[in-house]
Length: 68
Image 1 (cartoon, rainbow, N blue to C red):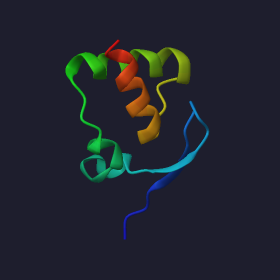
Image 2 (cartoon, rainbow, N blue to C red):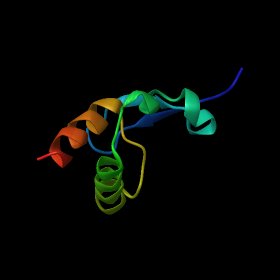
Image 3 (cartoon, rainbow, N blue to C red):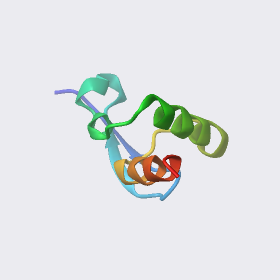
């Protein structure tokens, strides 16, 4: 059985399971992002959250913000 890390989202502090060791099975892969949205979220994450993984709710919120 693979081990996955329980993470605390640096943006909202909610706990989620990160499957970075099996990224294709990670829940974050379910968030459909354009290249522009990925670049925006990566930039925000890098500067505000030290590049840490974000939960799906925060990814969806940042996706919506990036479209404004």
